[in-house]
Length: 105
Image 1 (cartoon, rainbow, N blue to C red):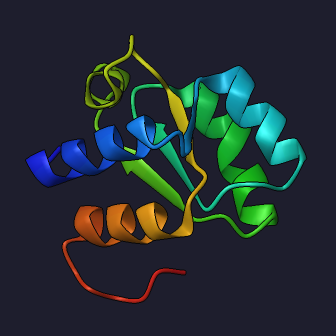
Image 2 (cartoon, one colour):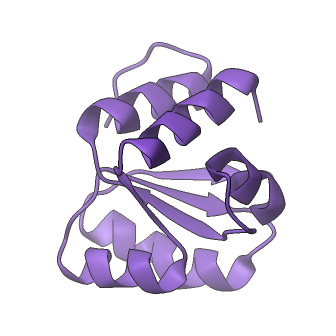
């Protein structure tokens, strides 16, 4: 995970614009809220549970290496799922991860 991606995730957390952890993410997806779902590749259970759901409600999904790095970027314990609640942060994170300034979905 790039240092800029780490910084963006940390800023989004400090701004109160994330939901971290499976229970928080699930609650918000049920309400059809959020702009970007980030899942850890080493959590197949979370991927199976949330990926189709997010695509059904038209929220883009981004996969990161592992839950330890995702938690570290947030300053929390390991997390398998994170939902970005702000469109601006979601767009910036999407573009940084994809290394291309293509349009955010």
